[in-house]
Length: 554
Image 1 (cartoon, rainbow, N blue to C red):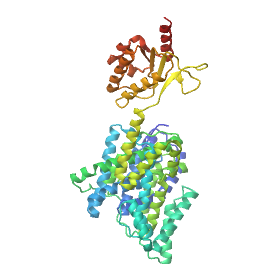
Image 2: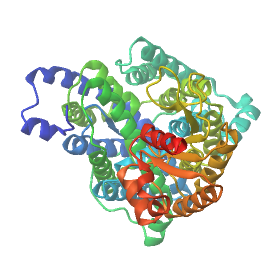
Image 3: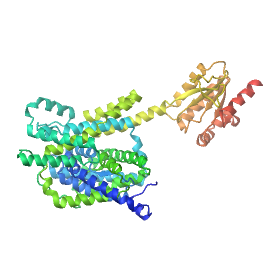
Image 4: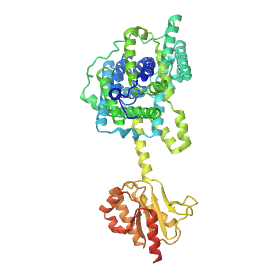
């Protein structure tokens, strides 16, 4: 099923009446999840709870109009909140109003980056982050979230910003644990985790927070509460910051945009593949940009998507973005009649909501799976995780992107290659590492499975000479199988010219087999086809081998 926003589904008459009930049920369920999460993630980002509602209330309808995922739980999310907060706090100078303006500015910049990328059709940028890097990054974020709530969860004063230092302060301050605070935190967390285990569709956070409010009221506990919530409905205005602030926040905003979009598109694709529809990567960039620009001017902060609020609608059977519209309407109604109740939520309870979210994103299973497949990629994930924890989140993003690029470049620079051979019963040429295949004496058939470019041109040349030393007999022919070579750059062309000259100087006849049209055109323009002769370019390996045999028989 092709990608479509809610208006497109309605206009194409693809929306079915039978979808209304599951969409409404999913919307109500997500609203029950969103109310406590919006408050908790706003506080995590250093903002009042109302900022979380203002952000969510502009995100939900806009995404329904533009977004192509039918289940993505767009809105406040802990990873982007804490990443933006890490940048804003450095410029705020302890001024709450300036801090809020900086957080809104980051959201606006994220929106501009995403909108520009969507217009330029850069949806492929999500592929810059490999799975190991994402697992390491999100686990590092989870640990950072976890340690950020130590004080609110236990009552122990914590001043440090670094996760390791926070743990150290907590250990030395164990005698300052407040029994009431930690009691509320543990009981709320336990209820959230138990209800999550029973069914992910149960709004565990809302039920647990309601329970904590009742306990505090009934027993008259002396516990810190959220307090009066200022207007939670959006009011639109530009954040008051200068150009110097904007330029200082650009790197952080770029990191938030990359992480937020990657998280969105991976979650959206995962659900879409199971539900049988498509998502448009470039439209998702536009949607992310639009919600963040709107969040910026409405007093919100940077947003992406929540995995829990995305998978729950799919579990319930939601079929379209109508569920987001229902969530939007439900949250508005709740804010109009229930704001006074929200003021009585214990802060330790909100901390439990964040701790539960942190435990959910720490990807131990992801580390296990990567470790079972590749020690190198396990190390890559661990380094990314340590960069996030040990330095800061923005550095973690930069390390993640840098390591992904280095890993990709490393694999492209040293791709798989093979000496090919034939054998009885084989319909073609395969690697001689397979015991069924034997190399042909006097002929080297060499395959290179990667693009030829500046980082591997010399390596390619060396590997051909090494293959000649390993191949039995006195070679008089070399067939270069180019099927796996998707492209060649000018640097590699120079290395190829030198290689052919060296081989011909040694009396070897060089042939090309199975080049694609793009590669063949480049070889012609570079004069390499004239160098070896047009008659030495063959559509198949068998044709090249037949030519070798004919020359050998003469």
